[in-house]
Image (cartoon, rainbow, N blue to C red; front, side, top):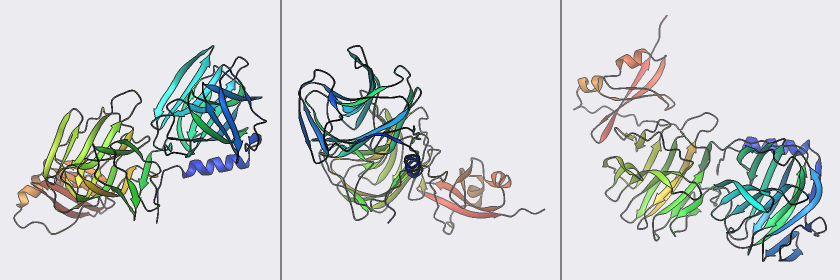
Length: 442
């Protein structure tokens, strides 16, 4: 059982090594609240126990630890007592004597925020969503900010979020804050003397064997997705159901296996641009109730194609945005290169129950998603002139696209290095696949 792969293993190892060779400047397990003092005039109820400092805020309330830090990595565990807050709850750093400084917080809909207090006003700098923020009730999320000079790097649950440059406040105190009407618990504050760096996730995979859906977040619909017996089950619900993972997946391939269980409506893959306060734009790669598959955007259809046979289907989108289902290439599909998506997931109509397996998006260690055409005998009613003069794609033995052709493949083969290749030629409702070996002689 392989479980999930998030492309963050190297980052975790880096962090572990960093801690091993870094000095801990400050650490508090919150057995008491002695290290913290209320810093503003906010009103709240406090409770300390079981290693948690719990704050029920009537008005916006700030706490701080009066010790100046300049370059550091500051982390703290935060638990929401209900679903994610509608008001920010998070950590403060580089606080000045007049409480000017920075705040890094979480709020509704898996959103993280970064901004700064200048005078009596708060100015937002970042507002974004991330599927690795845990929005379930009573879930812990570990916020971490790393500062080196004017460079600020932000992490949540050991996943790198983003980095910005802001040198307005070069040093100051640390603290935490609870928004008006919110209740949150804080645990294990730590400051080390070494700045950490990270890189955006460029790939994600899930075989659903570990029984959780970490890295996935619901966007729409009221169905409840579960990971059971190695598949993600999505039952019928009310409204279109979308669940997604987001990272730096731009210009990246995607694949999944989907099995239809019941209902007569659409289901498949969705590529989206998710940004707080904006409409969600997207492209869809779907199978409909007539067992046809299509590609379309929120602005209209791109292409559709013929019937699919069977209830379990493999959907593939290559890095070059070729759409493939069960080894059938969707012809003449133009994917809008201007769509700057940052989230990839699946969508299911309310009337359908389906199961997804082996979902993968992005590139792992430079290895592309492999499309392996099903090799079989050629159809006897296909004329040699069609095979020689048709339009198609050439793949190498690992399933990587190496060439495409419109007027026959012979010239393309002459330009390839020695090896074995698959030539895939769409024709009607089927693909014709030829295997050719190229041998170079001196």
